[in-house]
Amino acid sequence: MVVQYLAFVIFSAFAIIGAAMVVWSRNLVHSALFLVMSLFGVAGLFILLSAPFLAAIQVLVYIGAIAILIIFAVMLTRSMTAIREPFNAQSWLGAVIGAVLFVALVAGMILPVWGWGSLPTLPQSDVVGTTRDIGIALVSADGYVLPFEVASLLLTAAMVGAIVIARED
Amino acid sequence: MASFLTTLLVVAIVATTPLVLAIPLIWIERKVAARIQDRLGPNRVGPWGIIQPIADAIKLIGKEDITPAGTDKVVYNLAPIVAVASVVLMWACIPFAPNLIGVDLEIGVLYIVSVASLGTMAIMMAGWSGNNKYALLGAFRVVAQLVSYEVPLVLSLLIPVLLAGSMGMQDIVTAQQGMWFIFMAPVAALIFFISAQAETGRAPFDLLEAESELVAGFNIEYSGMKFGLFFAGEFVHVLTNGVLIAHLFVGGWWGLGVSAEGGILSNVLGLIYLVIKTTIFYFISLWLRNTLPRVRIDQLMNFNWKFLVPISVANLVITSLLLKISQVAGFAVDLTTNASFTAALPMTLLLLGGNIALILGVIAIYGFNIRRDRVQEEAQAEAIAHAPSH
Image (cartoon, rainbow over all chains, first blue to last red; front, side, top):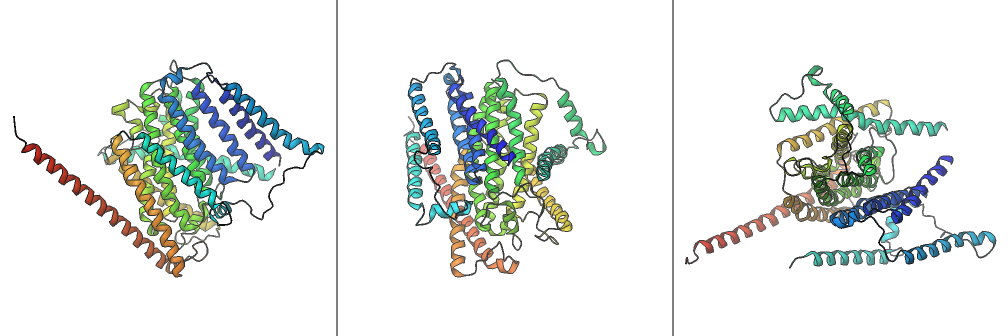
């Protein structure tokens, strides 16, 4: 139990420090690398929550594909790597939204302890959260087959759009 | 506390094994390359030059640790560590024998693929932080190559998962008790082998360190042991691919006299069988590396996106369709429980037939396309030859 607690602290530190440095770093490539660190921390938290499938997908998709494409895009635009000052004009808006979200999440957890409202309860189910269960839930008719198919349609549309934009003629 | 210490010990052993293996692997690699090129190879240090890699390692450690001017120091120093770590992490859930495995994760195969993708990250970090345009060009090629070849790799990896009904490495190996998956899915095995070779970045796919084009590629600014770490990572990656193919397609530690329950005899024999199978695939990989010329970047991408990916998708569709048919027809066997050779035979023949049909279809389509292109080219040449001259 102590080991799990220690792991939780380490992974949380990875996620939080990484996320903070994404915003504060003066170097765009460093920001992208800190994003990787943050995502890695989140993957670790998924493992502690007994969701190994999500953790592996987190590493494979977010670090293995998305983060690498971000870094690739930054490297390709040479002028971007030379920028040493934060230049996001909407940083204040982002900060406000982030703060509101943070306060809402913390309030949702703390207020029930003081007797206002009730703690959000997890949906009761006998599903133990193995990969097989996730798979069955995703494609069974009484599960999430409709959102799943709509999401794949969206991804296909995005892919077709990308190909259309990339075509020269 | 005792269990925690045991875990710690297992972690140390599993993490050290691939790194120690890298030392003899360098010698084997050089010897095999030398024999293929009609040379003797290292033969000065020790009998048959067997301790040459140790001498090399001492030399690499003794070299001056140079950090070029203008590098991004943290990223520069982190890159070789991530490169080796991504390969070593894969060994956490690779079984050695019926009872010898670091951790038998439920998502074993997915875990291996996801930590392997960290290697791409490491090469990008190395290419960018060195502040060198050749290194950066090498890193660009990495994204093009490694990310592209991950698609057929994962698609062909799905076939053993589909057949075994599990992503756990031990489950996939146990499911091959009666019949190796290579007989059920030869196309998937071949595609996996080709994409795995591309993932290691070795000839004929060694564009990320094409010496004649990029001087040295992404690792150009590295020297001493940091340079050595990239190579240690690459050597171990090739071996890891051998182990993975052995496990996924030719039954891993299964062999005569091995029982799934374990026991000392089973574990020892299982390890020996695994080493033999791995060595065969490792050798084939070296053989390809030393005999095939490098492909061009456009050939590399065309081969992946216009050849490997469509075939992998078709293969996946055909295999799952045939599995469903055999289930409906009633001769499908649950490979996790009942898996004797004769019981698995009808299903194997059906899947093998599907694979052969796929291969014939691919040959027919490509033959037709090539013939059509040639006719067009000849018509164009004819038109130019007969054009009225001015």
